[in-house]
Image (cartoon, rainbow over all chains, first blue to last red; front, side, top):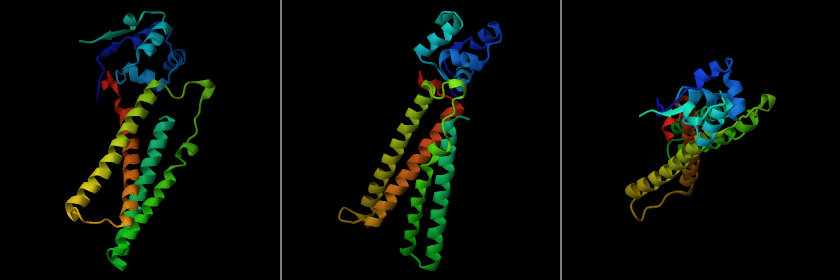
Length: 70
Length: 145
């Protein structure tokens, strides 16, 4: 199974934001719930625009949500 | 499972049945009439058009105006489409290469074989597209970086 080099804190941030559901985050970011699930499981690397939208949904910067795993 | 995956499964089932029916028909005709008459059984490949109403059977549902197709779906569709094109070209090239090797430079191919070739290329290419779609949804496309 391919795993992205881009790690993320989405799952933790969702729970920090009042246990936000994947669907709520998907609605805020303008994507499907399947895509949020895929990003959380590192099965999909989001585009830069989507990464910004997700970060903004949490009121954070992109680097606080996503990191490059070397 | 989203709409695209449902359509992909529908395509695979219909096209697999189409191949099975064609092979059975060829085998049945071969036992009755022998070759080359049995090759007419490949006409059953025409049943592959039954996969075309798939998008009508599985309509888009957008409860609450939610997003139903996003960038990930678009990427998967693009890769599946590339796979379909590759397979269709590969089948055509393979056929003509084999025809050239087996029949020689001055050989000829019956017109009916060209119809079967096009149908087979279409069926295989659509199968490849559907399989790629399902695989990419299941495995993910994290290697796209």
